[in-house]
Length: 92
Image (cartoon, rainbow, N blue to C red; front, top):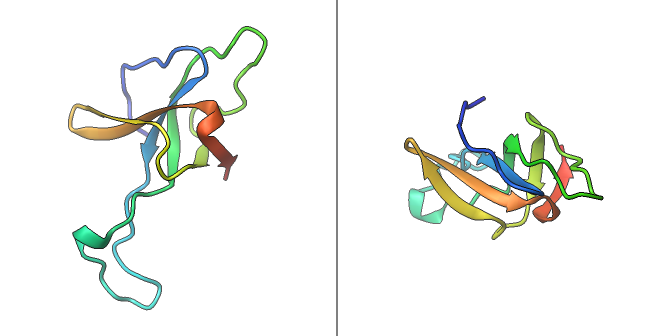
């Protein structure tokens, strides 16, 4: 897991997206222009939660999120997403 000095506020979560698929199930190589954004990632950091709503995800969880969820940020050359916990669909 990555070590990042970012602490999300309130109910926000910092997620490192999984790598995009390089090959299809049948072995065809997918070109960069045809790759889809991953919808799965690992939680790197979590905020403190809201006053009456504690967070259910924790650091290290693998999560599924919406295709256009969160805001993309780049820290030290690595890409991350920062999103609200409500944008996360499931813990895998």
